[in-house]
Picture (cartoon, helix red, strand yellow):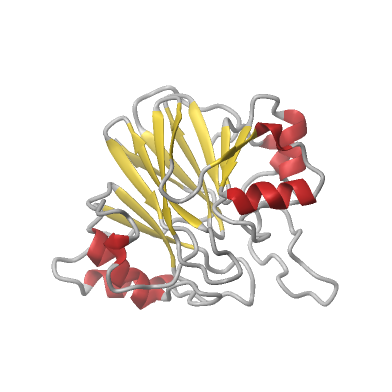
Length: 251
């Protein structure tokens, strides 16, 4: 994965950066989602210590847009966002109202932030974003999932959200995505491996990539259990487990 130069071909590229984070590239446009490259969540007692190395440094990543789906520290990286704002003068940061309020509380210049609340849409060059509900409980009451439409291809980043048996209500009826990106850690209001497979079965993506596991010891998540659950569905789903820094292409 070239973290500095975005290829200009017609493929949609999704690279997992660990945790919940992805970098999505399409037509020379590069969008980061819920990137966490620092160790800023670690406290003085060692809780939420980073366990997986980041695939690159914040200083080495080029971005046009950064989406933060909610204001938790492993989705809005306070160790990296100031670096990006300083060295990427054209970067726009997108998120719900709580993310903008959180950034203001940190003293960041929010003039380059764009509000994207549930039910809203946004055009980012050749990419169309649609924000949908991610039920992450009272601590993140406006957390979002994001549907990305990229030149006839579609990606759904489910975000942090509790399992529900009518998940298509969250996606406003959208389904049959080319790729679903779904958390499997089973902690802090997120689905576990079986629940994530159940969500995927409702949304019928062509491929489903698990995420949001193994970043912290406090997170659970078993990708093999997820794969097994996906393959037991009828019809079977197509799970794709990425290594940190690995890229998946939609052609």
